[in-house]
Length: 595
Image (tube, rainbow, N blue to C red; front, side, top):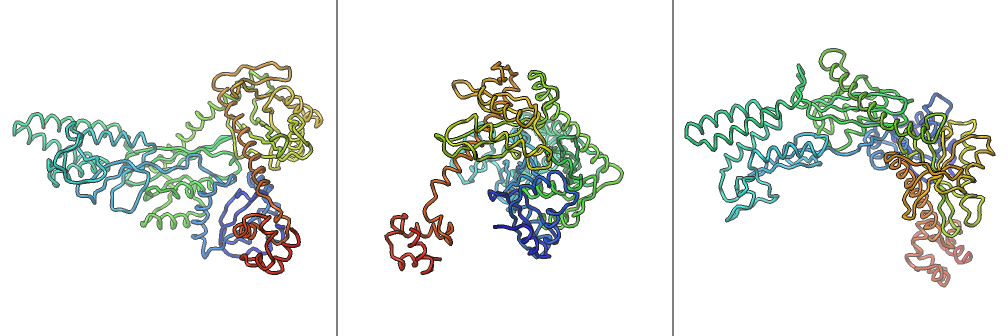
């Protein structure tokens, strides 16, 4: 059995990564440390921990660690483990994705242009990132409408051009309709356009228009003129970042509310803001801006993105030097993290923060309206900031389990969900199971709101009808709690129909509120079913070997691989059993005796 206090004494005074796990061996938190000994011990001592960390520590059953040669290695390992395992108590971005880019295959004889999410070291030119596929495709469509660039994935010489040539979407280099030099000039114009260097492109087009007009090639001159006007229009539509000398920077702004945190990201390339993006983080109110920004930088730039030359934030973070070294190594050039104090750069950071605040306000307005509406139709005394929902799952009275999910501030928070094994009910009796699980859960928060379950809910929803409501009501009454309780009932097609109260009255919901309740009920049901199946499958895979001391999963699997079944193992001799890898004569004798 894992003894936390004993294991804390064994921690080395070296840099590395620590991994916190719960009773089910799930990774719930990953962190790095200059000294594992000092850092990990802090979690289990009485000090000023944030509420989120206190909730995490309450769930820790055991931990492990990996020693590294230095803090830089620990940082990279920490980022990789967080990205792979997505621990629920780490700061996680809700929009964890790679950005789309426009790729120009300049190494090819006749280059192609297309969108991609992967940035490779293949000699091609990448432009972006764009915050959405739509905006990248919009630029690509514009380019293809003005330039006749090949679209085939594999270039080969042909005797006849394809359909794209007939509809004037390709200049047909495959049949020699355009020279390499002419095609390359088109590509250079496109690259100039993507880099924002439109002045040279427009000037060159004007010269070509003049030459075409002199040769009386009026149709060609008209096409060139339309191309010039289109480039001028798209240039005017781009927002200019005035008086900014750097041409490759990211600007990050942060805004807070009592319930959420929003991070706004401005991407500035060639003195133009080409994209903006935002991320939402929850339940980090106890974290400082510096901690949030540091974690954001690790997660965001761990993805396959083209790194900027500079990243501008409002506050200087503690591990700035470490992050700069890491980013510079990934980019193979210098990357700086700056905290501007004056001038246009500070104005940019302030603008990012203002936009983050606007985005946050708009988001919370929608969520607040949902819970405000719920307050009105349920006649609650206050806005239900926290709603808990419960469901029971079993198979003919076996493997009985319950699940709980949470709506907090108008959003379903899956990471706050819990599973329960029913302990006191034998056989199929859903109301008694509901009574047990709600009683157990509520006792955890009476007088100790810092436990893993947190504060008591403002209202409880149960999956089922009047008998489930009465069971939940009995549990709250016995604990002297006055909590509103409603049932989530389904129709004949097993879809959410309505909420009902203890008087069997159905409560009609608006379309938006119905979507929220339906999604909530589905989440609770899915979690209960998943946990039920997990226990059932685990029971099915049990065997008589599980009761023999010294037989773990590896040895059990090796025995089954050789013999196929417990019956065959029983029939085997001690010597035959001892032939299995890891099985000694003494253990083989013990297996034979036990079976």
